[in-house]
Image (tube, rainbow, N blue to C red; front, side, top):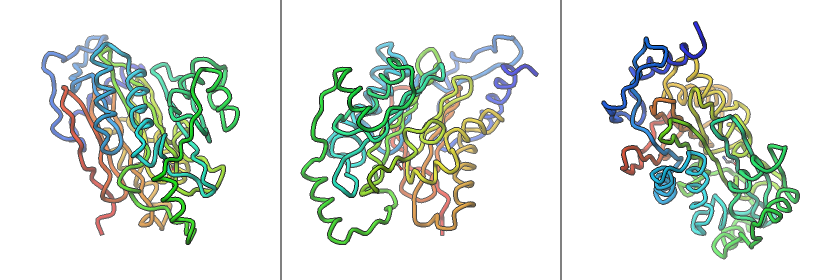
Length: 333
Ligand code: GLY
């Protein structure tokens, strides 16, 4: 079977499965005929935006971009940028909790419909890490820039340096230093890495992922978020996936790539997210001590999401309506 036909068939089979977002409306008038003429495909409504956690403003921003004929790439960049500029969010951009030395260090990546990718790791003093990642993708021959080099590149591209350690995050760090106990907390303040996936009106996908990483991490630590296939993966023929939670566990299982490949093989986004979480809990007997959550979307606009523990949720706009939907989860004990 030709690859294209195979993908069309697997996409169709996924429609039979109720996703985690269940009850997604189908648009009758968007029913397509496969271009080779044999298989009808009924996409759920597009465009759409999905993101990890309850990030209404960010999701709405991305949706607005799509409504103004922006691309999925523009949508995820500008949507993630809202959280990066929000000083109250302590896990992304400005106001992110620092490492144990008091430095706010950011990781981010972005991936477009052509499969191009750009990332920054250990970026300091520049809040819009996702936009720097996009510049890496579009303006350099490389895919990842780290640390000082990433900062210098950002400045050369016109980004302003600023102090990202807010008073609130400084106070939290100073309180942490009293005991200096390092224990990743499940659902840190119920708001962790922002991963965002969008499909634009042309049916093209892009994704972005941005974070300040684990609070009070060791200096130099990089998580899953900027690493292709772990924190984010997009294949415009199949779908996309993104992750939140303890990056070390996502990295060890290359979770987002795994989810996209499972969708390619015919699993629904929901089934694929559940299997990716299953791989983590099977391999790590300490899964009760950390959280990981995934959200995925396939080319038809079917959405799935799943986490290890209760507390994860996703933001979604399809048909113009914002929803924050609690995720199903593995650990029911
Ligand atoms: N998922 C974000 C991190 O572990 O850095």
